[in-house]
Length: 158
Image (cartoon, rainbow, N blue to C red; front, side, top):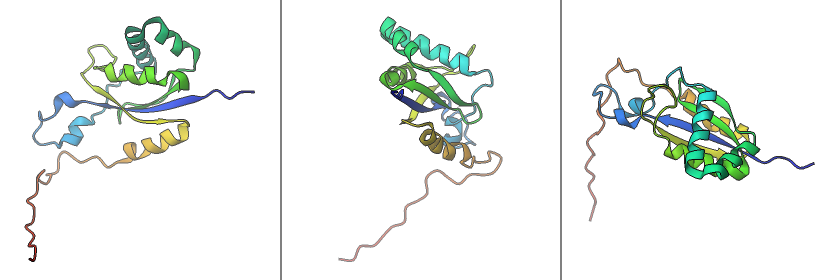
């Protein structure tokens, strides 16, 4: 019996259009905002399939139908999800994610889908996702240090 080869894509949703709009928050916090709770796995899959069909036509749509294309993990709090795709067609999905420019919900905000890791096992994709979800988020109510600290002058002995 032949094993079905699959790929797992770990994807992060970023919001770069809002950079610099909030002076009291660092850019990392503004870029990594939580996603709308209206985003579901079904809506995400539907949007990716539509984008693949728009880019690659019937050939791309047929490539996705053959394998088990599904969302294995979706977190609105961290704006992260893991997709399972057949190994032969993961590049179609990656390309479609690159061309998607808004969250696939009604009146979705502009965003960028960044593929963080392509893995052959879900275990490695999950290991990469753990630092993202457990990273300490800065508290916006506390004062933050300046972004640029002055460099110390060093003396070079000649």
